[in-house]
Length: 71
Image 1 (spheres, rainbow, N blue to C red):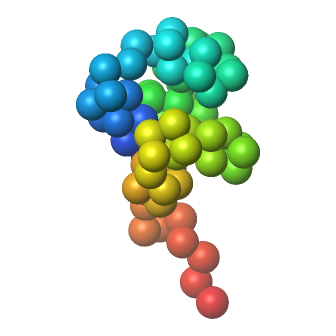
Image 2: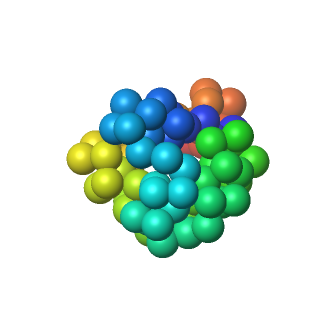
């Protein structure tokens, strides 16, 4: 499962869900789903989110251990 820190970052920056959705170009409902962990973003959306927070995708999205592929 993919966890994220979107809500934490959004609140740190003082951005509402509506403002954030406008910045990344998705609906507020998508932001709600992301924050609740009910939706995993595309790579493009994850990159947009990271750019807005001046951060890396890895800082915002955390893959749980069981999801890692073992070689």
